Length: 232
Ligand SMILES: *[C@@H]1O[C@H](CO)[C@@H](O)[C@H](O)[C@H]1NC(C)=O
Ligand SMILES: *[C@@H]1O[C@H](CO)[C@@H](O)[C@H](O)[C@H]1NC(C)=O
Image (cartoon, rainbow, N blue to C red; front, side):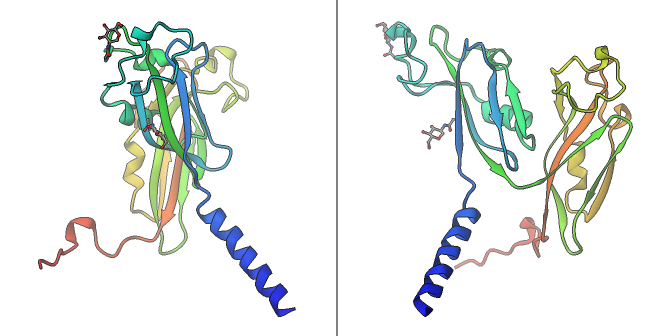
């Protein structure tokens, strides 16, 4: 009986460990002239991009049916792609990037390129505030807000569409990353109005929304700049 209990406990412990470390990295690769956009999606949690590459560092990926000279250059990457994809996708549940968006300038003319992103799905509070309404960010006592990502605009027809004419919801290529929400970082609660007066107007005539993800954390005792490094 004791042995049985022990085994059950160990099994539970193993399951918990798996859940705790269950943030696995996913890789999505899209050949540059693919019909489908680069599509990142989290069933649970929100996207947190680790790294992204536009170019070619591998001679197997996206090589099928191409002449060798289009994939034998494996030293090609566009700088800034990581930050570009982080800005576009961090904090979202679904994120699509057309490979056209990252094409210029061409980092290696004549080479057949791909866009590859490594990301994890991290647990977070995910909220949407339709234009003119307010997003309320709240943490438990003693905890503070840390924004993972925020976007103002529209990338989905089926969000904030009630009683709106089609013309106001059909533009789904208007999702602007915004740093404004970072002003909530370090606060216990925070309210942001989803409006052009706060974020500017990225697409006139479209009814927009604020999509925002954040986590609640215990504040670190000392800000990084004040950590004293002991000299040895
Ligand atoms: C993604 O992860 C894989 C496996 O670790 C690695 O081979 C690849 O280079 C990574 N891609 C990027 C864009 O960092
Ligand atoms: C790729 O192949 C072409 C044609 O065979 C050759 O001219 C070129 O030097 C090769 N490039 C690399 C990086 O190997």
